[in-house]
Length: 198
Length: 198
Image 1 (spheres, chains in turn green, red):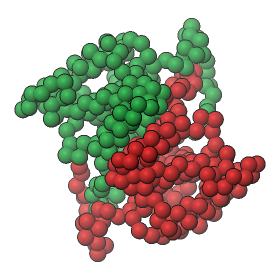
Image 2: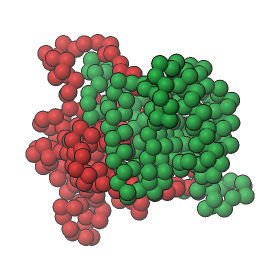
Image 3: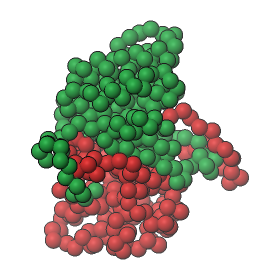
Image 4: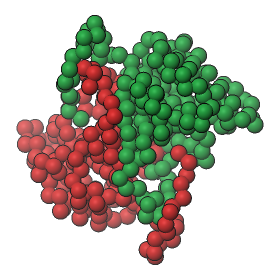
């Protein structure tokens, strides 16, 4: 994409450089495809900068994101870019092994870990994949989530994916993209396929 | 994303498996972010399947897609998944070295190579990045592009990115996602930054 020029220069007391490098809270929402794939595509850029990347997957799936996970693990282990830590809910997060826990408990423990990591500035780039669902389902306290994200220290970028992002999260975000569905193969009776959907 | 079930089963004479594995023509368009990042995120899935991936970048940029390119080259060279071939216009495509050529000539040569690769089934997954622009600028023959893509042999998936996808290309596609801009940091006077925009 050609580089754009800002339409307005805000009176916020920041230098252009400070403003340019402001950490971003990003949301990929909407009914269309590409919300998570775009977040993992961004993770490639973060990896290339040598940044530690943390992925937290919030919805259990039979297919997970096997392609993205394997690719990011290979990249993280290559010694060329940043490190990659990949955490997934449902089979137990990597930092706890407590099978049989309730999914809402899992979600709360995942969020508690993210809060610890944000406070410790563990990663420079976070993917909170399908994080809108536990928010929508009332498993997490939206006030706590928005305040924690808005007040995170340092230069930590966060991208959140999932349909139906709560309005207050959208308002708190610096960058919001709505993926709209124009046409999808399932409309023509086609189910998901390997290499495309996972 | 939870696996969906098709609403309708078409009377097209294909088995579910044949229909499921039908090669897809995909378009990521619209004014929002995520068009290319989602395409490169999909490329991770293709790589994980062991498929040969071919990337063709159609718009010259000072920043190119340095993060995605380095990541996909490391993956392609890892010996774990599929191979990756990365081609970019403007500095001369990798198969020709003819500096000073007109950009429209470059675009036509890029498309000619894609036609040869589709005919030879060189790759299983193609990213035609920012391909809508040479189409919009009239550098390529839209009839030829749509017919070639629609008639491509084998099981080759193609994803095309860029704003303002021509309507006939959208109609020919199996899957179209419109990335809508809800909020972008440039609106608040912020320019692009490393690790995020490239």
